[in-house]
Length: 115
Length: 113
Image (cartoon, rainbow over all chains, first blue to last red; front, side, top):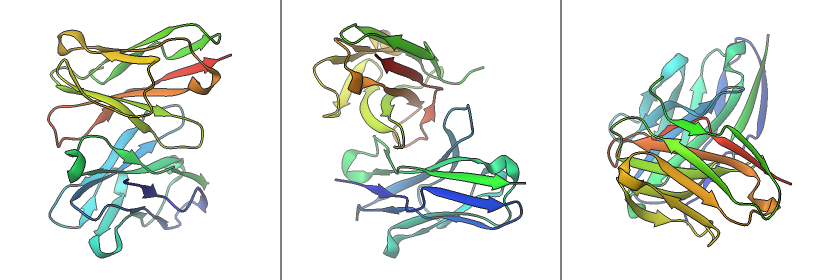
């Protein structure tokens, strides 16, 4: 069965620090990849997505992610975080053998940015 | 607001009672998904609809759970004879076509006492 691993459960950074959150998935076939963010008290929002093409994708609020197929990874990055980036971040995958229907999520990474 | 809406936002019930949640997807989105999220976990897929047809159900969806989407618009998720283990956030999402992004609603937080 498909699984998604987010190895960092909690991350604490100071403002202006660089961020990288890891995401690895287990399916070897064609996948679509997503990062969702949940700000305190708000619902899940799409940060960025990869379907095909350039493996470096840019999302909202200065976030980007790189799809490395050989490593089954889709790490999220931001060069300089802000206090407003405090949130929980979820990596998610859907795969070809389930018709790209259901999303499989990682357990999430809670990011706290201190001012 | 034209996003996905869910009602109620919070529900407290006693064990053994039935509860029903409603989801209104983004207008014209023909796919609707239900997920469940427990503390410290990411959302887990429960079921999805294309228009009014329920096309897949997870093994997480026991016989006590039933979902409907009459007329292919809003959807309801009913839990019969609730158990304490049903306490979770129930999330609804919708998408326009098969490969498109799923947009999530605010969720219904269920607490079973």
